[in-house]
Image 1: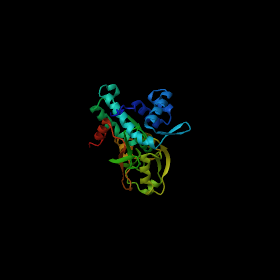
Image 2: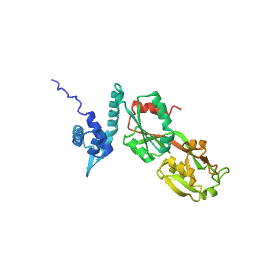
Image 3: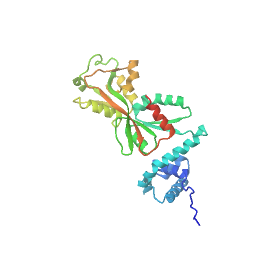
Image 4: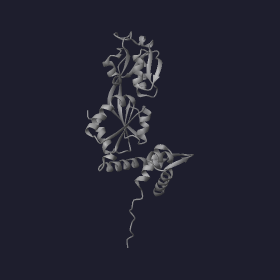
Length: 298
């Protein structure tokens, strides 16, 4: 007599949801707050999952839960299953439409993605888009931890868990306030050595590109202010405090309106790459795949 094999599923979506939330938050309390459950319910669900799998998914370090090798192996599969579950619900109710989660560095997030998201929403009105605008390091962190489906960065950095695809090109330019004495002539490196600069903060993609451009060609770069947004740099430069070094995307409108002016310099042009970041182990859901095609259509 053949013995009947128990093929009932022992894993549950709730267990995987708690596991993914703990991986993001580092504690069952943080996970419980994120998914609106009690801490005891979250702890029980995680314990049940580890019991079903027969392995520990986190190392307990004080009050923190640090994801271990087993957890890292499960996380991309869990994220894909949860995303598919949300998409299944979305087939029958707009209230549960799967969110498209994006993370972007500042220049792309402020000057390229808004138009792309608007045109995407026009074609997919039920799509719910969440966009985090952060520095390059945090874009990598969000994609690596599955908190974002797609990342957008300035440059071509690398990460062992992620793929970085070249997307578009951009140019860094020097700008000044309307009426600045350097306007109307080709400014030499010697003259730029004497300038006061207003730049983005260290760690931003724009600052990295600015440093790669200016430092090799100028004897000195006297930085008066380091600011955390493109708009802040533009406003301070427009007030006459110094020269700015920003993406052409960021200053295009200000130049056309006449309150910033691009300076012609003897420096060689500074081109940089804009890139798309994806997780190597994660299969994109339908919404993310569609938005990726939308962004790369042209």
